[in-house]
Structure formats: structure tokens, C-alpha cells
Length: 210
Image 1 (cartoon, helix red, strand yellow):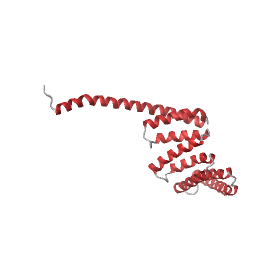
Image 2 (cartoon, helix red, strand yellow):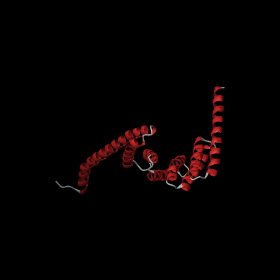
Image 3 (cartoon, one colour):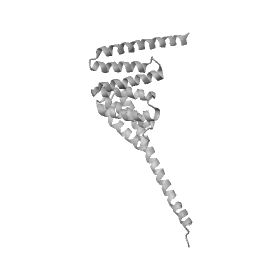
């Protein structure tokens, strides 16, 4: 029986396509299994962080991130979630260099995907600032917090809990290096903001009742 090149090609595809399909299915199962493991680990990590059991959470968070980075794209929300959790744990366990590097990695991704003024960028800047402060990089820490505050103001207006928290954190950096005169007005502004927010909340509550 003579085989033309067309018949040979058809025969080759007939043999190889099911094999390739099977390989793809197996690969998909492996990826899904990894993601499932990561999700399970992440639930445990969240519970341990809430309980402030950071040392116990550390190894689990590292595994969860490894699974997600292997199975998902670098800018996937689950990868960013695991980076944030692990960086938080590093910071809480005084691994400040590791925390700062991981927060920075997340920050670069957020800036690429959402832009430099995305509100998630502000959240990350706020979270990473203490690592640099504890490493003695005080100007870096304050610049991160100033940038976070500017983004918050753009999205949330002049008064918001996030902005008050950022002011207090910036003041704490100044206090660490004895710059009390610079810390005092920030603390005063944060207290005033909290008072205004509380007053508005009371008015809103009263209006709903009325």
C-alpha cells in the first residue's frame, strides 16, 4: 500500500493528537491540584495571621506562594495575595529585608497592571514602609507614606481612615529618629481627621434613625 505525504500527515496527526491532548489534560490536573493546595494553605495562613501566629504561618505562606507562582501568571490576583501575606509575615517576624523586597515585587506588578496611582498601590506602599523604617531607611519610609497619602486623597478625598492611619504611621517614623516637631502636626491632623469622621458617622446614623 502506497502512502502519499498527505496520508502520512493525517496518520501522524491521528496518532499524536490524542497523546498531546492527554498530556495537556494531565498538566491541567497538576496545575489545578497545585492551586487547590495553595488555596487550602492560604486559608490556614489567614487564620494564623489573624491570631498573630506568624512563626507558624511562615512555612505555609511560603509554600502557598510557591504553588501559585508555579501555576498562575505573575500578575494574577492570587499570586499578589500570597505575596502580600508572606511579606506581612516577614515583617511581623522582623525579616525586614525579605519583607521589603517582596512588597516591592508586588508593587512593581501593581504599577504595571493598574497604574502608579491605583489604590492597591497605596495599600502596598503603606504596608511596606515599616520594613524600610526598621532597616534605618527613614527617608525611604516617609516618601512611601507620602506617596500613599497622595493616592488615597485622590481616590477617597481629604478625610478617610486610611489617610489618618498613614499620617500616624508617618509620624511614628519621625518619632523613631527624634523628629518630634515634624511628628506632632501629623498626629494632630490625624486626630482632627478622626474627630471629623466620627462626627459625620454620628450625623449619618442619626439621619437614618430620623
